[in-house]
Image (cartoon, rainbow, N blue to C red; front, side, top):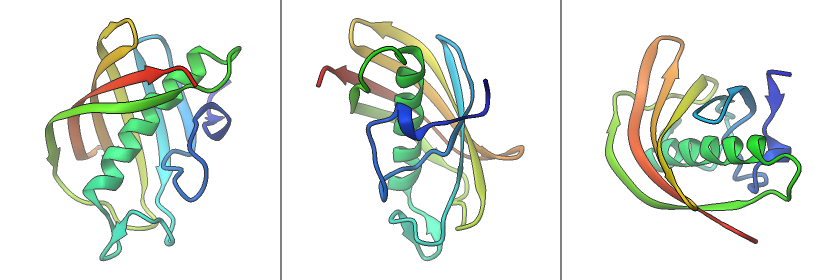
Amino acid sequence: MFPTPALPLIPQRPPMVMVDNILACDPITVRTDFRIPADCIFLRDNSLSESGLMENIAQTCAARIGWLNQDKPVRIGVIGSINHFEVFRRPAAGETLQTTVTVENEVFEAIIVHAVIQREEEMMAQCDMKVFVIDN
C-alpha cells in the first residue's frame, strides 16, 4: 500500500509537482517524500526556495485529502495562512525531503496543520498552515 505515487491524488501537474510519494497516511497524519530535481522551478541558487518549501507542505496536505477521498474527484485546496514559518536550511537539488503534516484542527472545509520538512533526521523547515478545501 505504501509508498504510493502522490500524483494521481493531487491537483497539481508538472512542473508544479512538489511531492513524489505518500509514505504513510491516516486521518490525522500524512508523510510524503520529494526528491528535488535539478530543473525544479522553485530552485534559487541551486537550493529550494522558501516558496518551494511552502508549496511542498501544501501539496503534502493535498496528498492527505486525496488519499482520504480516493473514491471522489481530486479536490482543490488553497492556503489560507502560514504561521511560525521557520527555515533551518534550504535543501539543494538532488536531496530527498520527507514532509510530515499533522492535523491540529479540522472544521468543515478548513484544516489547520503543523508541518515539518526533514532530510533524514535534519530539520529543514516547519510551520503551521491553514488550508481551505474547495469543491471544483
